[in-house]
Length: 244
Picture 1: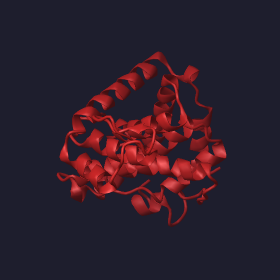
Picture 2: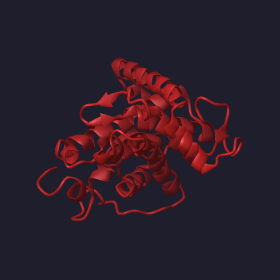
Picture 3: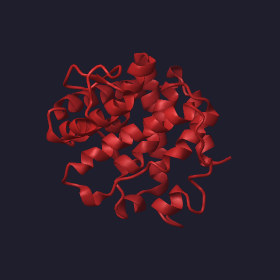
């Protein structure tokens, strides 16, 4: 059984009752913390430029652009809000992932939740599932992955976002497997751009990419289920043979 399938089966079978009180508590803290940094970052220049370039019109969709009263389409909201969430760099981190994790998941989850309907419990379960997937893959490739110059917040965070959104939108194990495989082609972000607006854009692109993978697969999009282990797959390309 390939890795994408193993992860997918864990994601799709995780339910609220499986979570310990401690896990629920910290998921709530992560969600609230991310909302705070997203609101604070919403007035920064980077998300404003992203929104201007997208030429978003209020009323185009059901999803809130945080810090405003504008509502846009889900993928646009994930991109703008994800950029805002990482703009100040005060968002939480995950040691195993090697980067920031909630700033990429929460904007995508809120956008998906607003567009398709979700409860608070749904968000918590999805956040927990996504966190686990991001951390597991992070443990596979770090520290080599990060030392090579990849920005794990984005390059690994996209798998956390994909898993979280797949759980939120109740994809099947087969669909989640495909979405994770697809996400290997949406993984991007180099550390060379730290210190510029591009760093928070990594988070926005990651939030959008993970949600995009899930929405595409819901419509029947395909990907190679062995995209992690393939000789030209994620592990060999992003870490290198013998380093995962």
